[in-house]
Image (cartoon, rainbow, N blue to C red; front, side, top):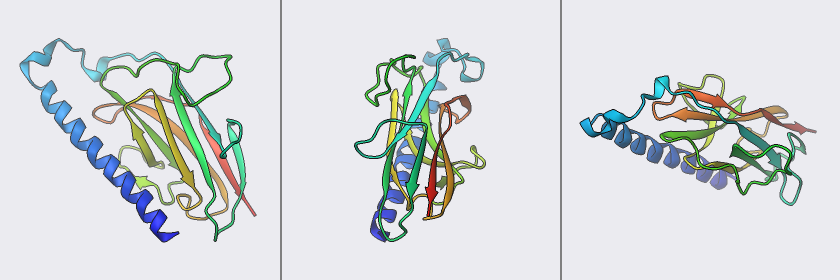
Length: 178
C-alpha cells in the first residue's frame, strides 16, 4: 500500500511539475510582441460550467458516495468533471461539452487536504489532479484521504495560466464510514 501511495504522490508531483513548466513557457511566450492581440486573462469573462460526479468501479455516477473504510484494503473510486456537459442527459465521463476556453486549465481538488498536494493558491483544498482537456478525471482511494473516517469534498476549478480561479464546479462528497 505504501508503494501505491508513493506512486500516486509521485504522479501528482510530476503532473504539477510538467504543468508548471508548460505554464512558465506559455507565460514567457505571451510576453512576446506577437502575443499582444490576446485579451489579458484577468479581464476575460468566462461563461460555462463544470459538472462533477463520483462513482465506484462499475457503479452509477452520483454526487454523494458512501464507502466503507477498510484501512488495510485499498478502496478506489472515480471522480470526473466535464466542461459544459449538456443538462438533462445522463452523465458520462466521455465529454461532449466542447473544449476549454483558451489558456485555461482545470484542477481537481479535495478538502480536507489529507494526503493531497498542498498549494498556496487553494487554501483548504489539496490538488489531486490537473488537466488542460474538457474532461478532468482521476481514480482516487482511501490512501489519499489518509485512511480517515468522515466526509471529503471534491471540486474542479477552471484557472487561467497564472492560477487564478475563473470558475468552480459543483462540490461532490465521499463519506467514509465504519
